Image 1: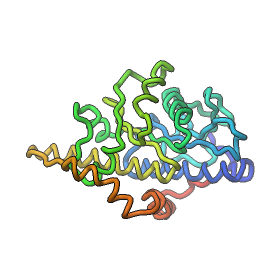
Image 2: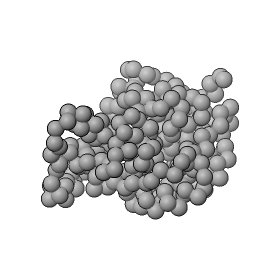
Image 3: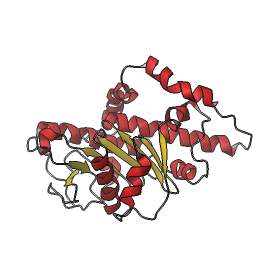
Image 4: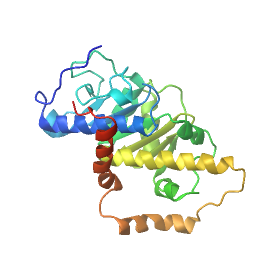
Length: 257
């Protein structure tokens, strides 16, 4: 299938800006080894300046690899799953169910990332889930929820439990399935997922050594939030994002077309 012509001068400037950010996020997820061929998904909610108040979001065309997605190839859909942009590709049903559910339930969430990495799925299969054994994990465990596996996420019946389990958290471990993060915007969600994935990789590496693990004490965990607040005034994703785009421009340009 041929690539669509650029939509830069066709869509609202706010939609184009979000398309470029989301396409960059897809390529960064691939660059950092967090993609699973075509079988996971990232979404970004369109602002009211674009939709006039209707709930709509952008998601990947089902069939394109993450490292080839462009701003123009992303698919715009509504909360019923109807395609609102011209695309030869369909939308992954599981992706629609998961992302539409979260965007509808969480007005504060602008971007949702879901992955099936080996480390993420590996830790999600462990009874105790993510352990507080690394600095990275301490950023996550205080804001982490769990969702039991119910088969492929293609049924509307799972929506209720998905929303209930996520609650107000920004990290969700889908047991026997993978990882999910929510963020106010694309940069925040990407760095949330980077830390989540890294914490899982560290846990598997530590466990592979066979020695008894040292866990961070509850007292230290309780103070992590306060310590983090003292260190920054903005989300670390916003600090890292410009550098991530520079790296992407060097190694895999073209996402902004």
